[in-house]
Length: 164
Image (cartoon, rainbow, N blue to C red):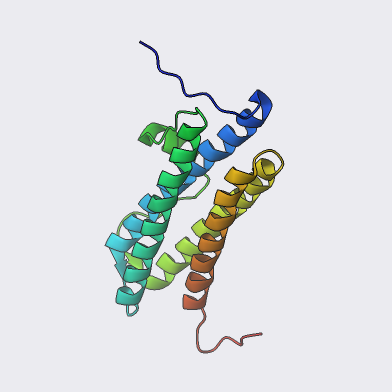
């Protein structure tokens, strides 16, 4: 027996939304894994505060990956969060193996979040033309990612840097 969930969106619009949701799902799964990898391997004087902040990113990425996957499923698009799919399609970036100095960990997160935000904004624009409900998910997600990006950037400001 075959089960089918049908969307109310026209096929062309569904294709645009489906590609955006699938791409975002892959990036969010990878972002959660990257943040957890750093979380386990960070060392340095700011270990504790960054360690805890990384858990915030993991929670955010996991919460939104579920939201994104469920939105896809509600539209009749089977979400694919398998490791092989994530590894083949992520735009997040990589993390070095082994212990990571706190400054390297922060720089890695700033880069990963920057990439994630850029892709989320592209997808938000694409879906905004065809599905406001999905666009709303991307708007909320982008707000949260940008908040984390700001917080990690603030971690990288040293006392000898001038703030403009």
